[in-house]
Image 1 (cartoon, rainbow, N blue to C red):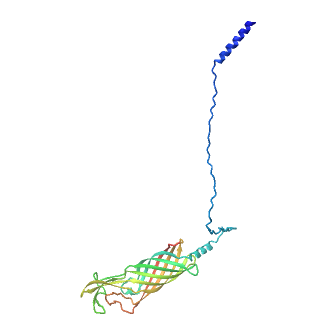
Image 2 (cartoon, rainbow, N blue to C red; image 1 turned 45 degrees about the vertical axis):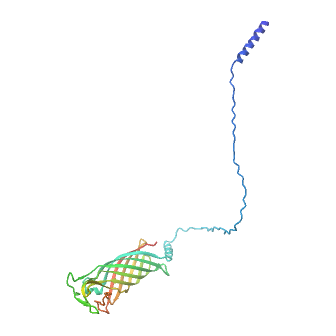
Length: 294
């Protein structure tokens, strides 16, 4: 019995000693220290002095649209646009071609019609009524020659010597009716739909030129020009037709009365035409105008 107790005791001691020699795994705990910084703003009131500013109250005007009429009258809209145009000027350019007939030139040429081209500018404004307007235009015409009198090429019935008022000799050289014409015109226009009939008052100046040999130091050896410088008045009738909104087709008739046609030179008192003569010029032209203004 004693022996059993001794053996049991030694067994317990041996087992305890055996387990005591084993290594045990230790658990390690790691702690992290987190520091959080924060910014704190402090608000402090600041006292401001009043500048005594006077500010008007803002008001937004409201308007209620109760009805939208989509079935508007196109003709009525066009009339309203025309009324807006009466408040402003309109301007544009014009170019065309035409034929001219001068009664005085019939004595020198068998060709009765003179062909030419023209270019001009104009400005207009409606008055009283949107359909009634006044137009002021300025045109330059270039007319081609229908005859050519040149003593260096052939004999003409203007050949020979002429004498000025102070008896200075002049020898005829050349003359033709190729020239420039300057026209200033005022038109009264009435527009009905796309048709624009008009009547006008105009003033023109024809730049005719005739050449003579004139004396210089008592020798007849200088070629000099004798030019027309008078202003003539007349009237015009015509019709314009509007196309594509901004273009006009022009058909116009002009009539001038020329009193005392003369060719003058500032150095010589001489006129090859007889005084107290009266001639007429008539021309018809076809052109196209363009509205530059909107």
